Amino acid sequence: MDIPRALKARAAEAGAAFAGIAPAEPFPEAAAYKRWISSGMHGSMDYMARNQESRENIAAWYPEAKSVLVCAFAYAGNAQRQADAGQGRVARYAALPDYHPELKRRMEEILAWLKARVPEADGRIFVDTSPLLERLYARYAGLGWIGKNTMVISPKAGSYFFLAGLAVNIPMAHDEPAADHCGSCSRCIESCPTEALSEDRVLDASRCIAYFTIEHKGRIPAEFRSKIGNWIMGCDVCQEVCPWNRFAGQSAVFPPALPENLPLNEFPSMDKDSFRKKYGQTPLSRPKLNGLVRNSLLAMGNSRDASHRPILEEFAANPDPILSEQAAWSLARISEAPPEARA
Ligand code: B12
Image 1 (cartoon, rainbow, N blue to C red):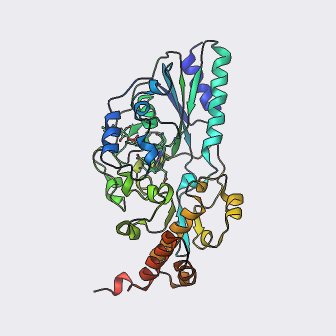
Image 2 (spheres, rainbow, N blue to C red):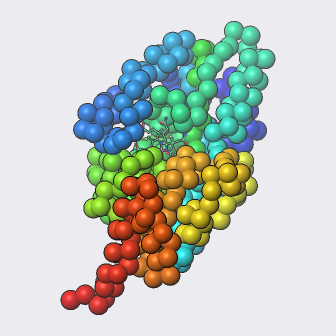
Image 3 (cartoon, rainbow, N blue to C red):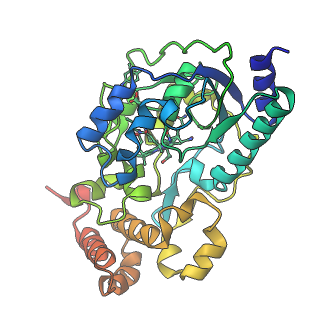
């Protein structure tokens, strides 16, 4: 049996849009990760500075690893609608159910299938949370190149896909890395509202809207607030402007769960129990209710819509200093003269 070929066919059966095989080796681009950490671009994501050895070399995570199957699961969803003043924008991936448990289950099935056919085979799966540089395996598995927006971009499917991997203890013929097709295009770099991207293909996460709205727990620094606009969960700007995303495919795995725009007054008026019931199984559980309230208050300010004043006034007196300060900032922003009225 041609194992690599059969394995990729099994991945397609499991819903992967495409898949490839990388050697389980350390790759030279991992040096960019070390520079990223030492220059503080991970911001408050302390977990990104842990397990540096395994991010540089998969052998520190799974010593028996010889090859890595990397699968791309498409999630493009519908083209996004612009939100109105009463709505916040949610990144496309976050409008779906949480991908982690579903993709882990599918990767486990692929591993079980392999073990049933190759008795000496064993492996370890990874979906996002393991301390590995997943995009490098994707690149060396031939899934796509690492674009200027730092996304893995496939020439046939753009970048709206999740990565899921299976490191195995058997050597296999591997795929060739995909050629780079960003060319002279730099739309992502120019469009990023917070200037988080640069020509060197590294994202300064400590400036990224996705980082602020999903991962960062504290106050959002004042200099970035107006640039965040109406994003309340993640950000897709650097993917929306990428010309390769005209090839993005629909998800074969997930039905759309949420609308991509949500009312800005929803989270500030919700209690923890109803949040857990409604959003507990979605990516919105990552920033938690508190993070989404902070983000919604911020977007209310950026909407400049005076109808948000009563909620903001209520939160300006909230005992949580992060929420009260954010609400005060947003009230002041609503009171500012509209941009066209300024000299
Ligand atoms: C931490 C993290 C974040 C952080 C930081 C993102 C970042 N760019 O580093 C934040 C919270 C900002 C984030 C945001 C998003 N994330 Co995220 N994130 C991760 C996570 C957990 C680790 C990424 C990491 O290691 N970063 C450190 C940097 C240094 O590594 P890197 O991004 O791989 O960078 C490589 C390149 O810079 C390259 N490189 C450097 N120099 C050069 C030069 C050349 C010439 C080349 C070719 C390459 C190259 O080498 C580096 C080292 O590998 C991964 C899952 C994982 N375990 O890998 C998901 C992951 C990268 N995220 C993912 C997604 C979907 C997103 C969002 C789209 C979600 C959203 N809509 O809000 C955004 C996209 C923002 C963006 N442009 O990256 C997907 C990406 C899938 C894809 N097609 O690429 C992943 C793989 C999760 C998954 N399993 O599907 N994320």
